[in-house]
Image 1 (cartoon, helix red, strand yellow):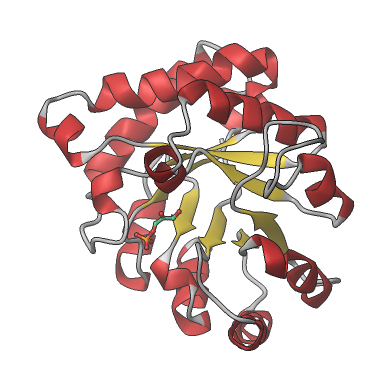
Image 2 (cartoon, rainbow, N blue to C red; image 1 turned 180 degrees about the vertical axis):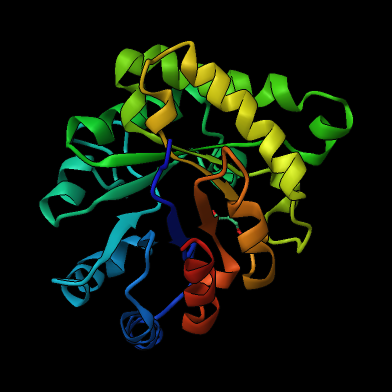
Amino acid sequence: MTRRKLVVGNWKMNGSRAANAELLAGLKAAGPWVGEVAVCSPAPYLGEVALSLQGEAIHWGAQDVSAFESGAYTGEVSAAMLAEFGCHYVIVGHSERRAYHAESDQLVADKAKAVLAHRMTPIVCVGETLAEREAGQTAEVVKRQLSAVIHTLKSCISQVVVAYEPVWAIGTGKTASPEQAQEVHALLRAQLQAATEHAGDMKLLYGGSVKADNAADLFSRADIDGGLIGGASLKAVDFAAICRAAG
Ligand code: 13P
């Protein structure tokens, strides 16, 4: 089974119109890559990012979405709005949203459903905290998080990308070792296999302090199909090097 690798930049709450333009210009000049590449910008910049990437082999996505279709949800952005601009990916359930916005497993699943309903691809994030890992609960936590999404999407689960992001590795410089990451990815793949016959075609990304010098080793593992990149996606040379490592 050869799955095309995917590298997604999650800019988080970073950037400016000028910085984004410089970053995108650098990326466009650095490509094309063998694998697929995407960037997820903050909501206000999405339209501008979409324009800048027109005709380019770089997809763009959002970092969050409302689970609701439309209506009185001040401050929220709907899946229909993102789809209208040609959005490709939507990150849902990032640990920062689970932690700072109290997003539950079910809300994350509902968001994934809203994204699919508008023919975009959800990138569903799962991952354990340091305390959970130290308590030996890693498998239990990621299975619970993924199970809510499987239960809600049923056979449509095959249309999502799953990102394993151990919370203790995000922005800390502490990457999960390729063995640690592969171990969890294999568990997630097995869980997906029980839910869909297409699990072997699904992309499972690793995220958490991925850098140019550790990306190739991580991406070479059997069930690691690319990465979700935070800090290192903000500089074109760094992100381009990671994209090359997925070649
Ligand atoms: P860092 O690459 O900065 O650790 O962030 C990972 C992440 O959270 C991507 O979504």
